[in-house]
Image (cartoon, rainbow, N blue to C red; front, side, top):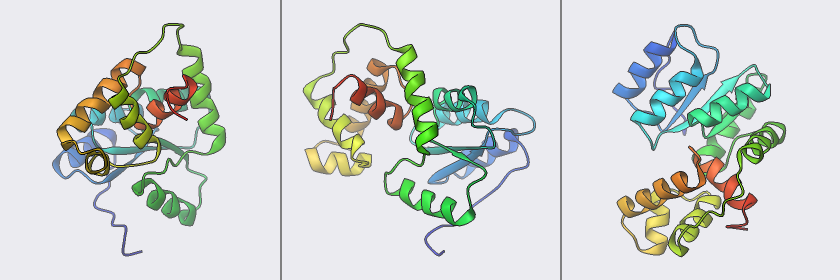
Length: 186
């Protein structure tokens, strides 16, 4: 398992935030049920401080409230603790490659939540934002998007920020889900 390194762990939410801010990992695996402060609060704090951090919520709860709470806070994925270590490692590898590690059941909950929040107003995103959203759906990183459509990484980040605001989402996965629901992308 030389392609994955554990660079830290924490006993509670406060320590976790502190360690991640001091030494940001590529992917943060956050337990929802943490002592001190909840994992959902930790996800929100990290999303505000490190908007580019990839965050996976890890939980023993499959209830809709936990899944949607984590997604609203800014988690990019949601996994149940019942997952085997082998499957977890596979999910982390896939996530690092741009795939979304969410079981179909949990993804259905996230989509149902987004459907319940939708309003009837049309979302107007520019052709360039649609192009960026389509590349997000393909699992491309900011650098890959920038290289593919000949933009700076900062410009790509600005487009993604605008997409998030217009679609009222907090993660790439939510943007893709809502973009597909609203037929902005295939």
